[in-house]
Structure formats: structure tokens, C-alpha cells
Amino acid sequence: TALALRERDPGVSVAVLEAEVCGWGPSGRNGGFLNGYWTHLSRLRPAFGDGGALAIAYAGAGAVPAVRAFCETRGEDVWLREAGYLKVSAAPAQDAAVERSIRTAAELGVAEEAVSLSEEEVAGRCRSPVFRHGVFFRDGATVQPARLARALRRAALADGIAVHERTRVVGLRSGCPAVLETPCGTVHADEVVVATNAALAGWRPLSRRLTNFGSYVVLTEPVPELLEEIGWTGGEAITDGRMFVHYFRTTADGRVLMGSGSGPIGLGGRLDERFSLDEPTAARAEAGLRRLLPALAGARVERSWGGPIDVSADHFPFFGTLPGTRVHHGAGYSGHGVGPSWLGGQILASLALGLRDEWSASPLVRTPEASLPPEPLKRLGGGAIRAATLAVEAAEEAGRRGPGIARIVSALPRLLRMPLGTR
Image (cartoon, rainbow, N blue to C red; front, side):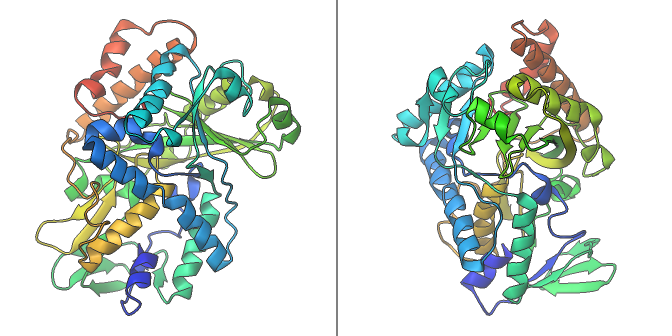
């Protein structure tokens, strides 16, 4: 957002207030999947209609070229690999998710954005005994997210943007100008952009729109010979069709990163240690590695880490301005934030500059219709749905039907039109 503001209005004064250091939060800990919204078209369509879904997808497709251009212009190396995105079915219950992606793209006249792959074609990209069939999205890349975050910081400083790290905002008073209070002093600003990701779940204006989930990854030792053995040498980013998705990718030195979005649920906006260290979730990520890629069963896991993700009630981000103020916000990336945060930066820059353009007119500039219950019901209800969904998906992967009560509870988000997963 800060870079977009300076690009559009070089005379504007911009300051970034960061509670820790740039990249400390989810922006530096994620799996590094960089793509727009073609991968989500089948879920965008019922939420935004045909036109809205296509508008969001076309806008989001600018993320990969924008990061590429940023790296070329600024001389930065964020380990960008443009190899596409592959979604696979790894159990019969996941077939529908893959088929829905293919069917929706065809119905909307963009079949080239979601290419159906047979089981044999999937194996040509990555061999696994549990992969059934898949869909390939050319709009997909990977980056090293912390390198990207620090590169953006360097670019901001080079452009004359003031970056104040370890400067926590402890109070915000809207007005003309607005006043932001920090332990080091106060900042007066005509326009304020609040884009603090998972911390926004505890901000009163948005607390009923967001909750936090934990997402964890494990990273193997370098295993280039095993990647050659299974044919996964193209660098594709891959996910399965679960609700609590497994996401996995390779690195340039032949490691495999496997992530699981099945971590603990937060209470309000508290970002406690469970989001950084939760052994059961890390174990699920490692179990996913062994099941999905059994050829890597002997690969040593060298490290694991986690972080919070801000999840909105409908699983899509939303942007806007608090009524009667010049305080703008962007939140709810729901585990898909590297590419969409570029899109969000364009939107927030237009809102802050008061522009009426394609960005401020985005369907994502909205107040979500769905809201979440207050705490502690939000955490208790979310925890029950999470546990039920994990039980159902574990049974499905084992070729069994999930327990009856778990199937009922796990279906509640869909029945309440709050699709908290990826299906």
C-alpha cells in the first residue's frame, strides 16, 4: 500500500508503523504461494456473481507480473519461481473440489485458466500413489516470503517512506487529522490504513468479521534425488482438495515444504504462542507429507514453524473505510495473502487517495454479509467445527465415512453460508 501511494502521488508523505519488524508476522512465515484468484473461481462465483468473480480473478492475475517487475526494477531476488499451481484430488471425497474448479472456469468462458489433468498427467508433474486427478492453473508461482517482505521494506526506504519498526500503535483517534498513539510518541495523519492482518481480529470495528486460525509448515532436508525420482522437478506449487488444505512446494535447493491449515483457533485478537508452536498441528503437517509423498518417507524434517491467519466469515478479504472517518482497512485474506495483498495494496491506495477507479470499485470493497458470533462463542464454535472437520477428512482419506455427528457439525459452515474451508 505504501509503495502504491508513493507511485501514484510522489508528493504524499507516507509512514509505516510496525509493531515488530517487517516480515515478523504472517507475511514472513507463510508458504510463499504467489497467485491470484483463478484458483478460487468456483467459490468466488456464488459469493460475487459471474461478473464479480471474473473481475476479481482478472485483477488478481496482476500479482505475479507485479512481483516479477518489482524484482527486475529493484534488483531484488525473492527466489521467485513461476511454475504454476496444481490442485490435486488425494481422496475420492476431494474429486468434487477439482471438478468444480474445471467446470466453473469452462462455464465462465475461461477454460484456459483451469486445465483438467488426468491421473497420468498429474503423475507427469508429481508422482504419488494417492493423487487421482487434478487441475492446473498457469497463474501460480512461489517466493521466499520473508525475502519479499524485507525487499519491500528496502524499496519503501529507498522511495522516502518512513518505516518505524518496533513501534506499536496503542491508540487510534479518528478525526481531521487522525491521531495514532505509540509508546514513542504520536503521529498525525489525514488518512490512516489499518492493515495488520491477524491482529485485526481483536480490533473492535472488525472483530465480528474475523477469527484467527493457525497454519503450520514442516521443511525437509534437501532431497533433490527423491524429487527426481517422483518427477517433481518443475517447481509447481501444489495443494490437495481438503477443507483444511495441505499445501506443498519445493525450494531451489531441493527441500520440500509441507503445510497444514489445521492449527488452533485464537481468542479475539490474542496472538499467543500457540500460533508459533503447536506440536499437534506440526505433526499433522508431517503426516500429510508422509501420506501425500510416501517416496519422501525417509526425508528428515529439519524445522517447523507456524503463524496465524486472519479468516473472514466468507473466506475472502474485504476492504473499506470506517463510516464517518478516513480510516481505511483491509483484512480477511484467509490463508491466501501473498498475491491478494498486492491487489489489496492497490485497493487501499485508491481508498486513501480518494480515487474513483477500478481498484476502489472492486467487488472486494465491501462489508461482508456474514458475521461471526461474539467471543467466546466464536472460538468455541470454531473449535467444534475444526475438530469435526479434521475427523471427517481423516476418515475420508482412510476410505471410511466420517462419524455421523462429525459430518453434521462440519457441514454447519456451508449450511450457514460461511464457507470457512477451500471446498
